[in-house]
Length: 297
Image 1 (cartoon, rainbow, N blue to C red):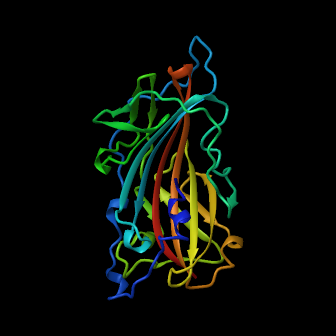
Image 2: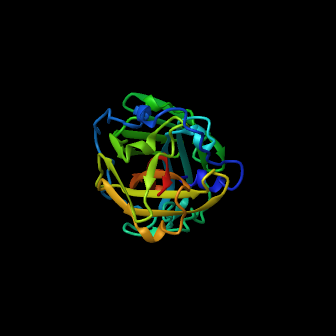
Image 3: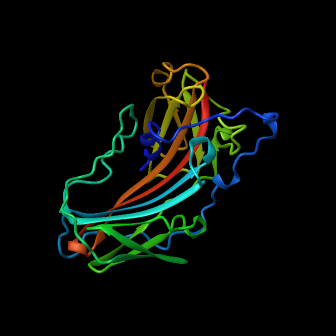
């Protein structure tokens, strides 16, 4: 979930700034943030109704890549984490991604809410495959399957993924990464240079590419004290994946200059795909998140 860092910041996770050891003109942005799509989709999952009417949502899968530009700055141990989560249940009318704000809105109180469902096992594990890689997702509980054993090189962009269970199968199309993000200095990897990006209290503009017409973009700016010891609050703004978004001044002007920020930029691609599991639908959620750093100015 996008707020794993935010929810933990009040306990054992904090951000920290180290003294600069040399001129920032020598700082190097993390080139691995820039991702080229590696594979064109071989086909879209069918969204056309079958001969027998389908009803309800009987599951949810979340393919989530989280990339932290400066892990040491936010108390994390690794740069990239990829998680595949599958949840299956009796058909329900409730979705799993209703927590994502409507496009064009901002909020300072964003919470993930699990729908009320009846869990349903679909086997001891899932088999997931794309054109060049396959992996197994073990069961963690009734109707719950999850793995983090996926390498970044194995994740295919804009590719068809097939999910096979003992109860049926379905497919979905993955999302893509980023060729660039601005301001580029929010991606500095060395703690000595991190937090260089200026987040202006008069309004903060971010840009990225490529864009995606079938996704929602969510930007969260989490604000901490100048030394990272206190968490002050956050604002999350959602909009179309159009390549640019501005966080309005009204959400930033309350914070003091010099406060540190963690910046979360996330592409959310949500689709309903057909499945023969209960002759229903799966809510497919592809999330690609990059976390950078900056300061209030």
